[in-house]
Figure (cartoon, rainbow, N blue to C red):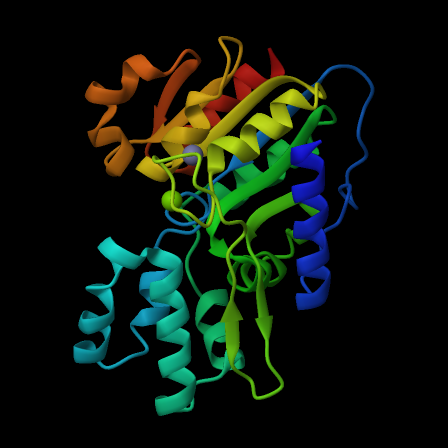
Length: 266
Ligand SMILES: [Mg+2]
Ligand SMILES: [Zn+2]
């Protein structure tokens, strides 16, 4: 019940912000039989860079460094909110310029192909669970014409003000999970999806410690796909025992395709 009401709240917020959430894939029909959920992080998993850090590069380096000092205490969302506020107020950079930068962020090599292959599979639903925001993700997905391949995007809502300033808001205000920031517990999102009973298997693809909470909810039949060479992989020794699912590691989309796709078909 909790998951459903939060999802409705999320959809409502996004309808207000103009971000479109297709409820089912528009170019691939769902097939009968047990369903598989492929849930993906966005920054450094679908796109190669961290979108927040990339956008903050639009600020002069001294201002950017000052704001980065906020991150340990106030978190990434507050950092981004302040970056966007300064960009608009002092540098006349509006949402259109921010959108242009985000649309040009390169994909992780081979990842667009992985997304399209997963979406083509009749049993698979694709979703994004990300601490970025609906504006960045929406701009990027539309630029690559893959927005309609995702059934859901769970992220912080964003809206463009009439002045052209971009506002980012928290997905939620949570205090139950100390692994995750107050604005988004990825584990709770995954738990809601798993508890819906729709999915026989769940695959989660991510790179950082904020994906660990989601991966900890995965069952023995599920698969965590951890990006090699990135934050979470470095801490796998310490956290590996917290996972009850199968784990595979990948470096780019080509390798993910090779390792993950046969497991989906099997
Ligand atoms: Mg990431
Ligand atoms: Zn959490």
